[in-house]
Image (cartoon, rainbow, N blue to C red; front, side, top):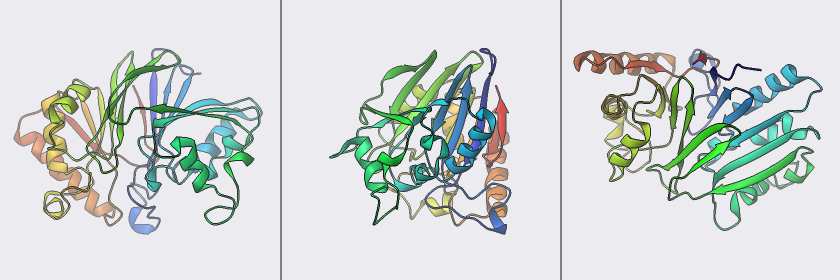
Length: 286
């Protein structure tokens, strides 16, 4: 068990849109969105992209025959954020408890989306009902942020600027706030609300899928531009920024270039912001 004063963050999937395995993505990783957060005895998983498969294997090795209890926070149900759940081995353990929390999805609700993905025939051979774990689904308002708790962990949700709706999440830890702001296009009418949401975050994980030249043709797609995200983080007084949701066309070398550009912007403005590019397998103790 992690001490109550310590939080540990692990990246299991940092890619957006579609998995991109291969030699050109080895350093940053090719799995889609999945982040693990341990705060005290609580295990919180953010999104169930393809990265959740490896997380599931790690949890099974860690717990062995002991029951696993965790919460899965879903930002939204676009496929790159839920496609790994059918391969999440803890969901097949009858003594395990999994609480799935996410925005209301019309018309069938959050559970209905997962059921359609695992329909037993057309999309996947195993149905959601065949998973033996105790799985519950709780809905959040996708258009309005709320505060709630997972055990002793205080969590706040916040709507982002993304087609179809999406939620960002902020976690309060003894060491400071951790904000997860994926699938958000900066510069919208909600920017003041977003700034307040991420204000003074110790760690900000933010969608920075495009560089400035790419962003010109991608306005309205609901993803971030590196320049805008760095500016947002500096305005909010964030301590550490992790560029996230890497584009499938960006290989390791391209992301290296985006990171160096981001660091250059920080130096240009004389900011103390620390910037890194999120990499699969990276673990951060807070």
